[in-house]
Image (cartoon, rainbow, N blue to C red):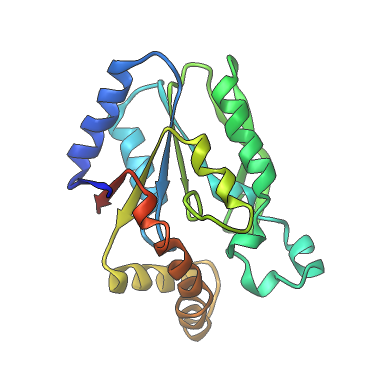
Length: 209
């Protein structure tokens, strides 16, 4: 049964406790449905902690390219579990765990719907690595290798109406028509959300946002 973290302040205190309790690298997974605010939440944590000992990895950099998705006939399902390069993502986590120097990894750019190789990095000074993504607790499509690589996982809990409204606004912001945005958010995105919900019980903590 997951434990509860009820506020941003509680989340910050928890991470501060991790930093104070060990000098070893700690991989913390932040999981949430599409539109749950994972990126905003993790960036807020990083800004609030003001520490070069905390860094972020986003799973989104491991989206397969649009060209590969078209070849596999998965382009219309981009964002589903089988549209990511899970093996390369898992290898990144293994590398980050062991690395004593800066590690580079791809960054996803929503404005071009593509990943930029070596677009982000983890500095050698970082001890708590926050990994954010939809499928860190997913148990099929090859994702079952990810959870064992994490030291702890948090599942973000948010009202579904608010989450869906955010998604629709985001899709419009990046170029979809209001009709197409709503269709994608309540179709493909919502199908993925149902899969992600199955991992809630495997999280160590549920975080209210």
